[in-house]
Length: 582
Image (cartoon, rainbow, N blue to C red; front, side):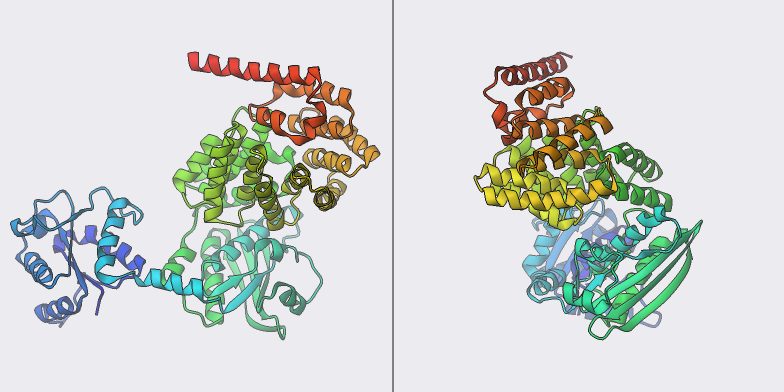
């Protein structure tokens, strides 16, 4: 027995097929007679299905209106109270059905999110109740997943450390794919990646992550070929449950990722729901070169060095040249452009790229976070925060969504919210220090000095690791100097300020952070001199920070500081007036 019987003209088969697919994707069963097997008795089969169906959707078109069969099926359904009519091409309805509410599907474009399809969905729910998909989702929410997996970073076996971006990208995509299976609980990426290169056994990893299974593997990329090995291990006894080696052409990488995910599901004897199977098979791009350039850009983005941002933008631009409908590189580009704009290295604040990413994929969390960042850079903190909330509804683990939300909340003096966002961002990416460095200031603004010191120590420990590996890391030096000043390490703070000024002299955000550090050290004249040297390069987003940043409180009563702020505001007012006149 089907939930829905579709009555239509055979001439409209190609137009009805997308409607059938959309209804099935919702979780309803549909009978629509696209092909009747040889030997079937036509009238008898249709009669049985028609009588058994819980509702009938009649698709009115110029062709079906003229069909006595369609009109007869619709009349029978109306008599039984199960009729749900839809219309295409503004077809003129049969006279005896014109009083029945009919959903016009013109313009729905095969989009299940379109308001007209959603109207049909509500009409069917009124007769059938929620579709099985909704019921399954609700049940899954109530029932804890039965199987937990930790996907370890796949080892780069290419002999080239620069290929690390590719093996990490493969790992992250497999984590994403397995996360679409409702019967699985996947250990968060940041925790899984904390075991990168670890010498401990699988049993210990399972104990720490509470994972029943651990997936380990390796990637060897050579020219146009790729070899991926993978094995699924039971963490309790370290026995291999499944293992395979794949040697493929690089152009097959997307199909290979699908194959690995399906093999793991099969090895665990799980059943994929139809929508889960489709979700795993859906790829953001089918262009291997675009995918490769995006993975490179993402790797540089995770490293957090501002010197890499121009490279990130170039790589993302190349990716979207190859595939303009690839949303992820548009979002990553937008974040880099915003960061560059903040330090006066680019006139582009990333808003256009972020909007493009959202237009392509409205469910991409980082795209909304990037838009929030652009608004934050324009001083529109409430608007930016709303965009970040959208990002975090889509993905509560979004690093960029939490980081930018924290910055917006700080500018709005909502310090409890800011701390929550910053600490979440720091937890999502273990090597992250930017959000971690903002948290101490928020604790201090609340008057929680012990909390400030503890947060500053945690952030500084991360920064010291970064600076040890990259002594010219401007962002790390800037935030680190402020943290050292907060902790009373005066000589080290001054040494970092001197070093950073020499290694990255054009980085205005770095210099602003040094102004904050000097202010904390009560080096008032030095702070004001540095601020006066960089203020003309500042973006408009600086204005709220000049008014609200608690690090600058020791400067606020000085006439020179007041003049600097007044001149900056007047400059931006003139720019806005000139722009409106143009």
